[in-house]
Amino acid sequence: MRVLVEILHPAHVHVFRHAIKTWQARGDEVLVLSREKECANALLDAYDIPYKSISALGRKKWSLITEMVVRDVRMLAAALTFKPDVLVGIMGVTIVQVGKLIRKPAIVFYDTENAVTTNRFVYPMAHSVCTPECYTAPVNGNHVTYPGYHELAYLHPNRFTPDRDKVRALGIEPDADYSIVRFVSWQASHDVGEKGLGAAFKRDVVDRLITCGRVLITSEGALPDDLEQYRFALPPESMHDVMAFARILVGESATMASEAAVLGVPALYISDTGRGYTDEEEAKYELVYNFTTDQCDAALTRLDEILAMDDSRAVFQARRQAMLTARIDTTQWIVDHVDKVVGEGRS
Image 1 (cartoon, rainbow, N blue to C red):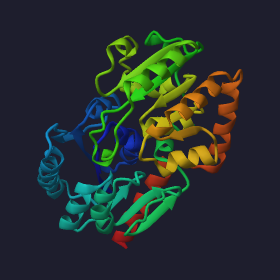
Image 2: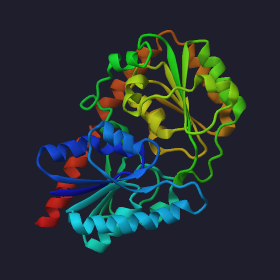
Image 3: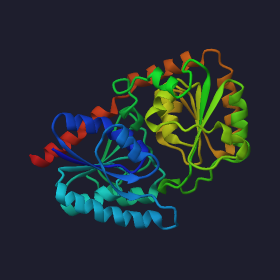
Image 4: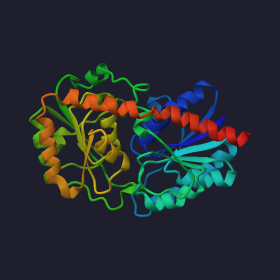
C-alpha cells in the first residue's frame, strides 16, 4: 500500500506518527508532505520520519491563499511521481483536490467545527470525512465517526507513557507543583473571529498559579514584559512528558486542553469558538472547563477552585480512567479505516 500523508501543523505530526510507523513497519510505502509551520518539521525530524516540505506559512493578508496554490501544484507533482493508493490528512484542502485529479481516495480527519468555509469546500470532495462522535457541525459528504479524539492517537496508554527523566532533563521536577499556560497567535484559517486574551487576564492567571508553584508559559507571540520571565521553551518532543505531570493547564489552545484532559490534567480552555471535543470532555468527564473571553471572571473562579483541591491529581486521574474506558486508541482506528478504504478500491 502506498500512503501520502499531509502535515500542516505540529499537532498533525502527533496524530499520524504512530500510524506512519505502523505502515512503515509492515512494508507500506509512505510519503509525508509537510509545511513549515512552527515546529512541524522539527517534530518529524525528532521522530525520524522522512518528509518533504512543500510550503511555508506566510504572514501577509493573502498568504493562506497563495500558499494553497503552491501546495496544490507541488503535491500534484509529488503524487504523480509517488502514485499513492490513498491520501490522508487533517483539514484536507490540498489532498481532496489532488485526490480528485489523480482519481485516488482522500481521507480527511477533522475535529474543528468552526472552519466553516474550508469544510464546505473540502467535505464534498473527500472519500470520507472522519470525525470524533462528538463533532457537532453538519458534514456534507461521507461522514464516518469514531468514539475518540485526535489526541488519543498519540496519548492513549497504548501509545504513550510519560518519562520523568525527560522532564528532569529540562530542569523541571515532575513531583513538584507546576502549571502550564498556553497562548496562541490566531493565524490559522479557523481562527477567524477569535480576539484572544487580554494582558490583564493573563496576569491574573499567572498571579494565581505562581502561589502554587512554578509557571511555564508557552506562547506563539509576544507576552507582556512582566510575563516574559515565565516563558519556557519546551522542546516539542518533550511537551507531553512535561504536561503529564503538571497540576493544571490554562490557555487558548483547544488541542493542548484536550491533550491535558486525556492525560488526566485539568484544563481551562478560553476561546470564543468552542470545540465539540472539549465540550464533551467537560460534559461527560469534567476534565476540561470551557469559557469564552467574556467569561474570564468565571474562569478565574474555577481556577481558584481547582487550585484549592487537596486531592486534584487523584480526582482527575480517576476521571481520565472513566474517559479511557469509553474511548478508543485512535491510531488503530486510523490504520483500520485506511486499510478498509484501500481494500475497497482494489476489490
